[in-house]
Image 1: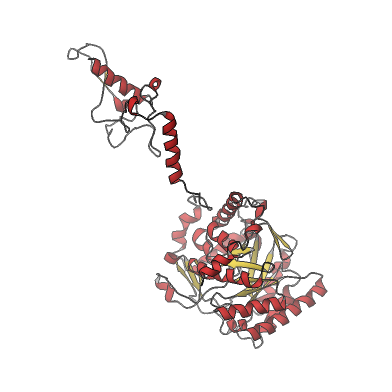
Image 2 (image 1 turned 60 degrees about the horizontal axis):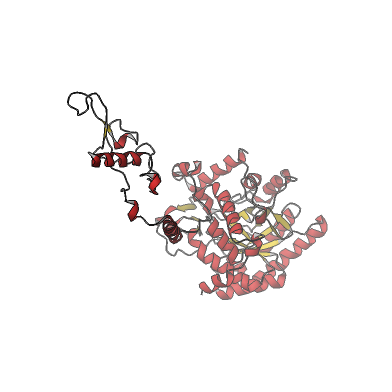
Length: 479
């Protein structure tokens, strides 16, 4: 009888959260993620038995068959048991030892939190399967129309330590949208509103052109990539200029990416025309000579041709500065497929002609390590497979041009980790595009939050302090 009283007392103590607290016993802890109502649901499966106290007892029936007629008493339910066995206090280590063991176990399993944090389920994530059933170019058009409605939630301003002052411009944060997303300058203000530090419109050519035949944009979901062979489809200088005039005075950094028409005789003249058309409107220019979808365009990266192009383009910029009273920075966008000699030629010409910056890089013709059948399509590949190639090239370019020239990192950025890697490899600014296809507009906020956490973690006064800190390691890794 005494033994039964001890068992009953232990069980009652368990249901209250511990076994005899006065003897230093530890409370039974609830396993994370388990319901607070059932202590061990797979075992206690009786209908209606949901209360955790009831899981350890059942009510005896009163009557002649009971030892104490008319008295309800508690007895242990044999099919139910506590998750943690009752251990005698004499067998437990002292409290101080337990605390040390707990801290050691926690230290072994501790990992630094990811910069991007845990991404919650978003509306875009729910809608993406349906969106991916639509042709990629059609879906992109629907995205632009949605942004054009103006019903875009404003993003909370980024951490002030993410601000970047380069090119004579004050960027609120280093993350921008790459050219190709808004070719005709339809939604630059909506882009800035969702959190981007700057927007780049284009590529725009002097005359409108339809581009290459459709279909010409292909998703590679398992590779987290996109192949496009658009071919500089755009509405031309006049249409873009009209839109930029309409937004004049709204603020924000909006660069213009300029290119040459497919059938032009003098390609350098088309770039000069782009400078003259937007010198009073553009925050900066990007000279795009690296698209793989216009035949012969990449030949302009050869040293002799590049030297002539830059000389004429920068002269046009300087003439426009005299007329408009403002000197617009000019950046050069290069391909990731340049060999070591070609990269050295580009760096040498950029330094010699005093280009303001270089964007590394455009899309690639490489198809290494892809698994999607669409990989056989011709065109430029963007997205995650481009990250290592473009980041290594960025680092090598940083070592070639030194710390003063502005570099913009593009290619495979789809998280705060990849954005920060671009910065440490040498990028002052970072652009994204394909990452948005797979992550949605919430990617911008996720990257900015992650970069802010990294700045705090590394105790940096500014994100600029991290620029190029790992450039040599990235360059050596590239071989």
